[in-house]
Length: 133
Image (cartoon, rainbow, N blue to C red; front, side, top):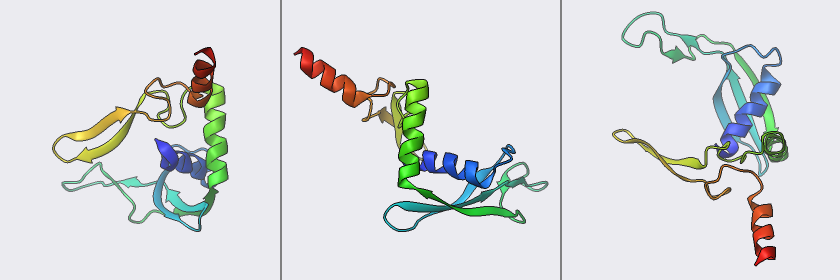
């Protein structure tokens, strides 16, 4: 899930204060060393043709742009971990997507942050285990 996920969560909160469902990121650009500019909106479904039902950004009014800082991302991740006890990188899944291929789909590996446990606080767990040894 990493940083991109948290940026989209924060951007949606800033750009969609009414919490209307269906908001999505359309554009994300890193600006400077510690901020990302995000625009989004409510993509609409295509009504006819072979792509009927797929979402499109054509004719959609965009929300934003909003700026999301690296500090906001760190705070959001920390809040999530404190509230749920889950790892902020894999969201408690224990694995992360590390690639994608058109034939085989997504490829997953154990989350490096939590060593595949899905639990928050890997650093604290490591320190405790070192103290016991």
